[in-house]
Image 1 (cartoon, rainbow, N blue to C red):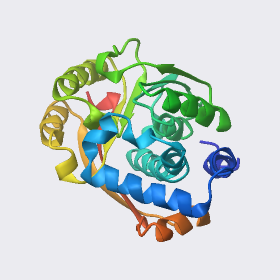
Image 2 (cartoon, one colour; image 1 turned 180 degrees about the vertical axis):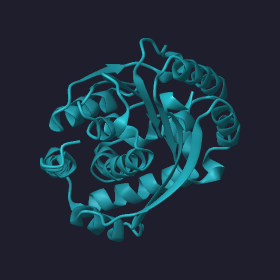
Image 3 (cartoon, helix red, strand yellow; image 1 turned 120 degrees about the vertical axis):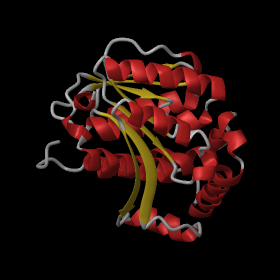
Length: 255
């Protein structure tokens, strides 16, 4: 990370408003933020079916509010784990959404690696390409399903808010791939919400993870959000003065 250059997050945040909010007013986006918050907490099954990205309002709410929050959380976790010190030429971002996890990690590394990202949603793939370009990152983003994706080579791997959306059988397959990748020397980072009822599989994964030298953590980071995020947070009746999440982390030195 170059401490002397402007924060690319803030530049990207400003560009997001120009990209998504020119055709929507504040109240329309606020209602969509509230709808997505409800969807995350109470109707997880619709997320698997793409409900998050249904309609311009929800897409704008996700891109301009939830994606920046996710970026900040991933960046804080990467810094807390010192994962920016991982030596790699490539980050593989599985279920990349708008591309924030791979970008947040890559920007903490020196030299900055290229990103390979995959997602099964066409809108997310387009948005991830734009995200990486807006942050000055070299990325290849492809329309592929994580359920059947095969991890090859030896990249650093991140899956943020992805594994919980997979069916149980697919989760089992990807866990085996992660463990194999870790044994080949890949850093692996998995991030999910902290709420236990949303991730009933987490305990089993944690046992597998720690048994071979990985670590599992729960995080709470006090943050001061940029003004535009603060305004939307308050208007939507939410409170993100603290960002929370859980992570599983493999560092090659741990194996």
